[in-house]
Length: 224
Image (cartoon, rainbow, N blue to C red; front, side):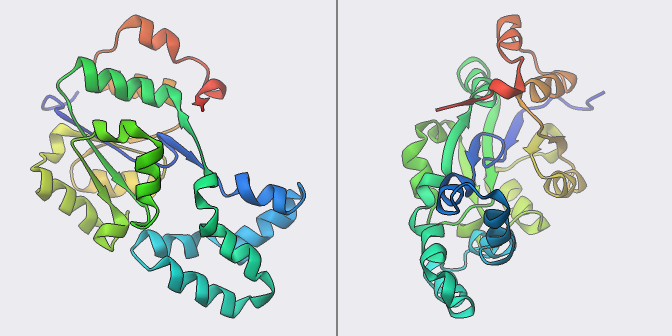
């Protein structure tokens, strides 16, 4: 049972509402060879390297330093951020349907907490106008600190005067969810829109039957 009524819902963005995949660019560059592409993304432009930029490290510096380490990959390394917008795929339409209902048919406060470079986030804001539905968005690159560091959650709490025990935090990364739970949030590990709707129902939220029927097939959750 939820001890107090939920009044705030905090969404992660990438992986929950927005589909972002370097493969949209690099699979073509590697002529469809997924093994070679994965080797490049696991070693040259690795996820950990990208996370540094999510914590506010300048993209130009990161790119220059990576080229110095792997000069033979200069063209591909420059492509990572040079064609970053092409890696922004689609909106998870089922999650967006939930967000739209919460925005337009309820009084819940809606916030977002995202690991995202402050240099590339404006591109997403231009591409996805529904980001304006949030009362506020805390962007790791602007804060120069990223999830799951507790400090970024504390900044969210203090900036928007959140009572954590009355708030839900949704993220596709279990470590990020655990960090929020440690501060008192109700945490939901995102799988798909259908699972999210039912997790929110278990926390006491109500959704119309037609919306639940709409959110059925996780394989159909992506839309342009």
